[in-house]
Length: 82
Image (cartoon, rainbow, N blue to C red; front, top):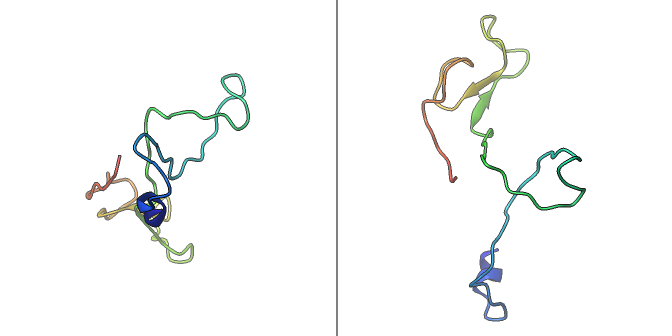
């Protein structure tokens, strides 16, 4: 992406890049392949995951937010690019 952006062959001064975006939209609102913009962006990748065989008995799930000690705690470390 960086090489493409800095190439003198392209003019990107008025260009927007959508890096990633996968979501479901109701068919009553839009059609397949339409472009939509979300009001909120949710980042779920910043979490720890226990192996299913090693989940502590008092945990309801194997996922723990970044910087937390239990699945029910709010993430202690907020990181985002939004």
